[in-house]
Length: 419
Ligand code: SAM
Image (tube, rainbow, N blue to C red; front, side, top):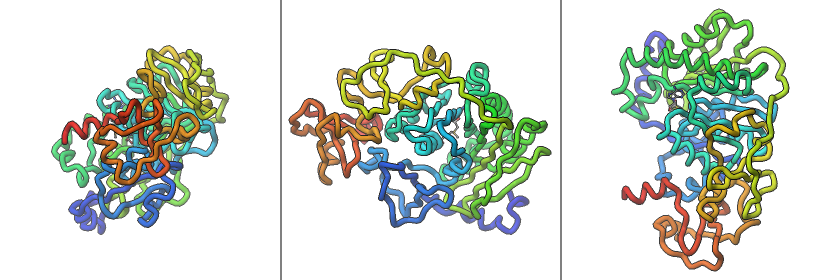
């Protein structure tokens, strides 16, 4: 690092001794008007750098999915996302959902389908909660190894994101425990894993599509050296360069095929250590081999935004935006995946209250006043007039009142248990 940073070395070292800044990314719709007086993140118009770290779990707007707490450097993924829509995107290591919610914010309801994949079942719990809170139902969640995807769906995606597991050197300031896990052999193991994941990821990219690779480590063997190895004979690929890289970023050139990577450092910008680089597969974007979702479509028990398709799987009722259902992958309907829940156990699901297109047409709205929020979260009994009341706070859905009781998200149940 000393060699790489030269004169900047002391500044880098002292940045590691300062408290990490807290940043959030606003929801494109639910986040409107929030945190308007704080600094922005230069590479994401909805990124905000806070001046303190509030207790997010006590904030009703966090529960409403009005913003996502995300380290700022990772928001740079946005700079590589293509404009053309609809897009079929796969995030191979998606948990807990930082990049996945960012992608959903970009593709929105009409922009395509996101496959949010992560093989770790525990981390998928957080992924599920975060995607539900975000409330844009253009995704499915899967738990496969990237190889599984590569074998079945070569060339199927316009964007493949591999935010790879890594030695985590860029996280030492925020999470000193990551330092204790570090060793040279750990980094070597990670390199081997990343290379095999990269080879799977490459196969998934459609002609004209892009591969975005990132890690939160500084180790070159996990970053540019990996990519130089994988793209050593890159006739079919071209590197993607940012036209005007943010000043906080250090650019590195790598490999014979002209790769360009970007490093983010804590002394230069508002985020933690991070590396990102992307490649485009040459060729014209062909026609999707899409299949409209063939699955038991159901009439919803309540009025849905008309772009939303309801279908049943098992006992529940789930939803996907009409575009996502149209750009569906062949054969996937028979596989195991999860989608945005709309109705469960004879009631609207907690997630349905968080849909970013509101429930005002379907249910009577119960507006929570400032002082009522704590009582709502404690599960206190509220009087009610209708079987289901959609609970909102400052115009954003946060849950339900049914039969006098609130619906609480899992995070809250855990939080209250631990208190
Ligand atoms: N993209 C996430 C975000 O923005 O919130 C963070 C991803 S984290 C850096 C790396 C993820 O890789 C972890 O969630 C981990 O479960 C996942 N992972 C571990 N082994 C993997 C493998 N063999 N294939 C794919 N993902 C893996």
